[in-house]
Length: 163
Ligand code: HEC
Image 1 (cartoon, helix red, strand yellow):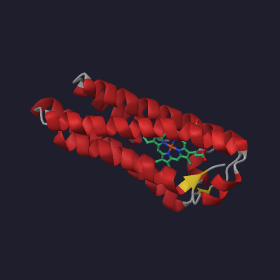
Image 2: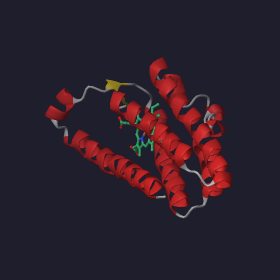
Image 3: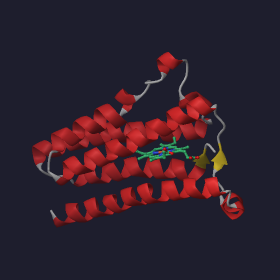
Image 4: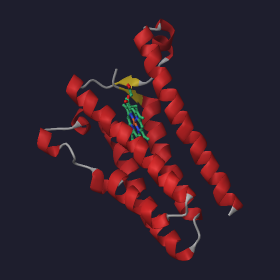
């Protein structure tokens, strides 16, 4: 139990990092900070403005889903957490932009898209581990799998930017 709590605290720390770092990066961009441009080694991925807006909206939804999963875990609602992981972050959540004639995915370099696929696959596996944990009471695998999801968020953010 203590171990699970420690892992949850680590995840909360990662999540806070995501929330705190993203807006400050945006603020630097708008300030036109030349140094941050020079030190920024992320690859620029170009996409039309409306597709950029789509990607960013998806991202804010991802962060909200991650929050909802962690909040459900904190209340020991494992089945609810499994449903959110499966439906909102898993492969079932893909293809939302198919009707619009193409979402952000088709503008991504192959390596970037594969990190995205890894994130969805990790969320599918998380959903399974959470459902199993609801039966066995052992959350160890689910916690490790949750870290695989955030690892994919983090890997993509470290490597790519759209502006
Ligand atoms: C395949 C790559 C990729 C994955 C995986 C990914 N992101 Fe992103 N995310 C991006 C890119 C690119 C941006 C835009 C960065 C920029 O502004 O240049 C972004 C931006 C964001 C933003 C800022 C949105 C805004 O309004 O500007 C948030 C929040 C975010 N991501 C959360 C997440 C979370 C949480 C996950 C994992 C559950 C995740 N992302 C997974 C590529 C990714």
